[in-house]
Structure formats: structure tokens, C-alpha cells
Amino acid sequence: MDDGKPTGPQAKWWSRPSAAGPAAEDRTPAAEDREPVAEDRGPAVEDREPAARSQIPAPVPAQPSDGSGRPDEHGREVPGPRPSGQPLHEPDEYSTPPYGGPGPWAPAPPVQRPTPAHGTVVPPGAGGPPPQYAAPNAAGPQAPAPAAAPPPQPAPADAFAPPQGATPAGGFTPPPARSADAFAAPQPAPNDAFAPPPPHPHPGPAAPAQQQHTQWLQYDPWGAPGQPLTRPGPPEGMEPGGRKKRRGGAFMGVLLLTLVASGIGGGVGAYIERNGGLTTVELPQATRDSGDRAPESVAGIAASALPSVVTLHVSGTAESGTGTGFVLDGQGHILTNNHVVAPAGSSGDITVTFSSGETASAELVGKDSGYDLAVVRVRGVSGLKPLPLGNSDNVQVGDPVVAIGAPFDLSNTVTSGIISAKQRPITAGGEKGDGSDISYVDALQTDAPINPGNSGGPLVDTQAHVIGINSAIRAADSGRGPEAGGQSGSIGLGFAIPINQGKRVAEELISTGKATHPVIGVTLDMKYTGDGAKVGTKGADGTPAVAKDGPADKAGIKSGDVITQVEGQRVHSGEELIVKIRAHRPGDDLDLKLTRGGKERTVTLKLGSASGS
View: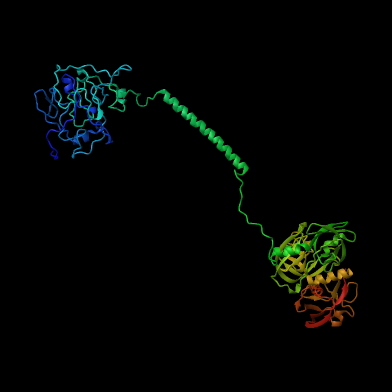
């Protein structure tokens, strides 16, 4: 293959002085005669696959035949022993490594490990006999048994050998000459890919299996000669027992460390769980405000009205009860319901508890069962705050209201709602059976929750003005109107006495101890089932049903007439007629519509007055 390189003789590398004898002349160039390669060029030449090796034919330099060679398996003549004076290697016409640069026909050769020095024992599998080591501190490896060799011939002076005793360039000192017996069987360098294969295998015995696993040591060509390149080691998988013990000790140490770390971690976790963490947890929170609220809000209304609301505890010889009231003036007068103070009788005790928690004894000023109102008074108490009174005639359905009281003795309870209806005719009481304790109320209806204990408490508007006195609830269990008759709690049907009526009755009770009722002077037939209120035939004591010279008699009302309207409002029963009448003051003019003999009539009368009880 013509690659453009000169084909003539190339400059030869220097060779060490050869020992006398033909065995020394036939040596294959040793690794220390070559320049070491510094870079890593891949696996060693001896590890290449045969396929790669066969693709690049090994050039065989032409040598003159002296008749002593013999043909190899390819028909090429293998040179015999070199004559004395020739160099240890032939000129490299292709300048292949390590004597020249890489040729253009093949990639750069891989890193080649240095070939052992001549005379050094080569390990099995690399072309040499099994290693034999000398005793400790021996000068070098023992040479193998000498093989038969031709008689030694004097070697001529090597033209390329350095002078005797001189040091070659690079500081390399060639090892001393070995005995000719050490080179009886010359072998090609194991990493020389271009050297021809040995003519015959080594006649020595096969290496044991365990020696195939020997490991090469780092070869130092500048080190002391005579040291073996390999050290026998244990076969693969047969580590010494000491290593197993070290591994077992390391495993136990790691296991112990894991157990200790787990214990510490568990202890820290338990501490954090029990103590709420290593640091104090602070959650975000809004700052505290001044507490001021809009006056028309529920909170603003409650803040304004609560100081004027009180809780009453009443006890008598037979029974006791709890209710609510509110302050009317600075003299200590308190308005409440008649059925709240009724258990005290004439000799019971009444105790008033203010919103601040202070208590005081109270005395009964007056009461009226027909209106279900009463007034008590506390003495020796200063700083009382009267609750302003509103006008119930201004109330409209849907207006927001707030109820304050002590349901089930829970004082200062505030609930809110609206006005559900107006002028609801409500009758309460009637436990005595003679009708003397029945109250007739033209009430305001609200859905603000009212429960037993709220009785007598104020129902206020958005300006914290009293528009009604909470008096009754409609209970789901009994269907009865008054609070005393239904104790199941609020179902959203509460009733309050309009404050306009309460104001007039309270003024009369404070002034005279009694309240007056407006009357028309007739006795009604309460058993009438038709639509309207029918005037009876006789009075309760056998007197005429229409009182002589009474308001009805003067207006021309007769026995048997059915009253159907009062001031334009429809009347469906006798109770409703009473409620409508008592919603006015004595002396007021009242327009009535009635039916007599199938004909309707309209009359006008002036209300009379009767003393209440």
C-alpha cells in the first residue's frame, strides 16, 4: 500500500548493549526501548478483537534470507537468529507507533502499556511462562529453566547502541545484561500488533486457573530493576475473611446510627406534638376597634337601650316567675306586664336587676288585667336612664325592630326582626274562668324571637324608641295566644301592646293606681257564631243588655243588633269589638256600622269610661 511515506531505511531507536550469544540477538524489542505513551488511546492492543486485527494486515519488513529461516502459516519466511551487530528491531518503513506517527490506514492506536524489560517474567496469557518469584528481598525474579540454544557467537558492535557506561537521552538507564539463558525462547511483545505470532507455543506447563486473575501493577520503567510486575491476589469472589468482618462491622455501625437517629427523631416529634411546636404559633388577627357602631344598627340600638332594661324576679306564696321591664322615668317607675307581677299577689316580693348587675327591691304601684299592664317602683337608686317612648301609630309593616328581655332568665338578650302586622286582636289570660283576668290587646305582630321571660320587655325601633311592650306569643303546642298558655318557645309569632295604649295606662296607674277602660255600654253575646259582634238580650245580672243612658243607648243601638265595623275596620267577633274599642281613649268619638233586620246602619257615639281592675 503506497501511502506517500518514504520506503527507505528510517532512523532506528537506540538499543541497549546486547549480551553475548544468539539468544540475546533474537530478542523482540522490549517495552522500555520504546517511548512511553502519555495519553489514553483506548484498550491495550492485546485486548483488541481478532476481527479488528485481521482487517489491518501486519506488514512484514523484508529481510534477506540467509537460509536459516522457515516459512510460517502464511508462507512468509520467519527470520532466524540475527547475525551479530544488527539492531534488535528492523527499520519501520511505515513509521508506526511507538517508532513513528500513526499511519493513514488505521485510527490512532490505543494506549500501549510498557512491555516488561527483557528478562522480566511475563504473566500467563501475555505470551510468557507462569511467574516465579524469588524469596523475599531477592534481587529479581528467577529465570525459567533454560532451553536448548545454539552456541553463543560474539556480537559485533551495535551501531545504534550508546557507548559503554553512557546514559541515553531522556535519562533512561538500560538494565544490565541478563544471562543468555533468560532469553532462550524469544517472544514478541504482547502489545505489538505488527509483530508476527510466535512460531511455537511456550513449552512450559499450563498456568493454573487462579493465576489467570493476577493483576498488573503500575510499571515504573525508572524504578529499580528486578522487581516483579504482578502481585498474586485472591481469585475473584474469594476475598479474605478480614474484609467480610470489616463489612459486617460497618453494617452494624450504620444500623446502630439509624436506631439512634430514629429515637432522637421520635422524641423531637413527640415533644413538638405535645407542646405545640418549637415556637409559639401566632395567627393573624384584626386589631381591636373602638366598639362604636352605627346608631341605627342592631348593635347600636342594643347599646343605647340595654341600660334602661331590667329583669324582674317575682315570688309569692304559691308561685314565682321571671319577666322583663324598662325604666319610665328618673323616679324609678318601671313598666311591665300584669301577668309578670301577678304571682307576688298582695304580699309577695319583687326584685329588680339592672343591666349592670345591681339589684334593688321594688313595690307594686298599680296593675290592670284588662290591658295586661303593671307599674312597679324602685327606691334609693340613682343614675337611672329612662327609655324614650315612640309613637306606635307611625309604625309600618316591615319596619325593623329589636326585642330586648330575659327569656328563660337569660338577661340582656337581644333579638331582631320586623313588624309583621298591625292591629292584631289578641286575648290573653282567662285562667280564672270568670273572664276577669282576660286582657284584650290590639297588638303589633313581630317575627323577632320572643320567649317566656321576654314579657314586659321593650320592642324598639331603629332609633331605640319604645313602640310596644312584648306580651304574648302564639305557641305551636296549644294554639293559645298568651305567653302563660304556651311555653314551647317562639315560632316567629310574637305580639306587643302598642306603646300609645301602654303610655296612657301607665300614666293612669302612676297617677291613681288604676286604669280606665273605654266602653259603649252594651252586653255582647259571646256565643254568637255569625260574622260580627251581636248585642245580647240581657246583661250578666239580669239587667237590660243596653245600659240605660249609656253611649250605645244614646246612639240608638238596640238589643239584637250586629255590629260589623268600627272606624271602617271589619269586626268578626265580640272579642274583636272589645279590642277595637279599648284601642281608644274614653271620650273619643267612634263610628260604628251595624245590621238590624237585614238593613245596615251607621251610628256615631262618644266612648264612656269604666274603672279597670
